[in-house]
Image (cartoon, rainbow, N blue to C red):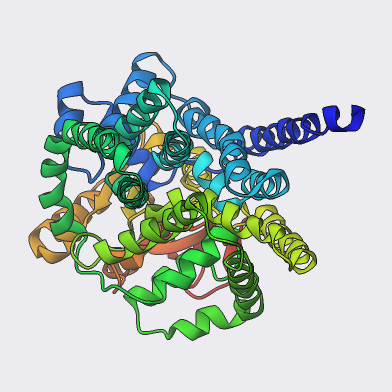
Length: 508
């Protein structure tokens, strides 16, 4: 009797330890990487008025922008504070994953799923970003836990909790709708199976529609602007296995994301980028596939069907939506990540438990390997913070030409003294605009610094660099994570300049 009385305590103690680990790895290195473009845009847009945020056509509902706006108004404008809500959401996702996993598969799989999520590189990546995605995951888990309780006959408190989670989820990201679609499919089946529950589920459907309608005006503002700006990227079947790879190792396992992006804008074959990482890529995909297959041999229940739908529908929904709306990105399906961990961990409850346990150890090892190199230069976010410190440290009043999709956050770290010339896509399409901007940079005299980050997104033919190479002399080149800084001096000092093609100085 004594051992039975202690049995429920052990998993809760382990859960506390796992949650503590999750908090340490999220909050501990919260500012290790600099802001990248999307974080800078979140912050810049949130600096406007509440009315502007509500009408902003940036592709997102306004709730996260309002949160950042409140932080800025409270003086919490540092990288740490702006990322702290995501880190907190990512930490709280671990016990919620356990709570759902326990209902779906029992104690051991629930702990395994919570452990996988605690050190998952993709979960940590978005827990260390000033963005909406960690909060979307938290709302997906909160709504799912309340939904499971409602399926089991939960009361008014669960209904309010579910409706509140939907309200926040829809306010954070439009693709949260795919989470609700998966839940709605199970609710419909439950209504068919139990006619006495039809009125209840009809009321919950009305509540869900009302929460979505609150954000309807923002959706209409975003729909036109984003479909025009970001559509045209072809839907690819490769997006699905790549999503599976990111679910295992985030963006630090397998081929670097920037190298993959370069193949989309150039003629280089994809295999040349993937080949050096083929072994670890195949291993991650193979282990995940086998675990998912083993888990499917368990007896199907309503909660297990819900778990499967919460993995499949958000992934396929975002992928199929890319045909009509915007290009596909794995982060659009990140709400499925903890449910995928629960599904794979549920293989421990099958007759293949020894094999499942071994594969889960391999899966955790892959996560830890990816986590170890998450800050490596090949995988880290664009380090505009280090680039800005280098440039302004040498020349506080520098003339800096920014080229590439990820250079915007340079403004955050450079201060107000630098003279910035940002080259936008329309500048390269308009000769007069292009020459006016480049002429303005050259007319100031003195050194010119060229900052390039993913330049193939804006200047694939290197026109900016060609102009600077012709007018000035390249003196030095420094490489940071995803950022190249090139310094030009007046032609009269050409003898002091290094020749183009000479070995570059590379930061460790």
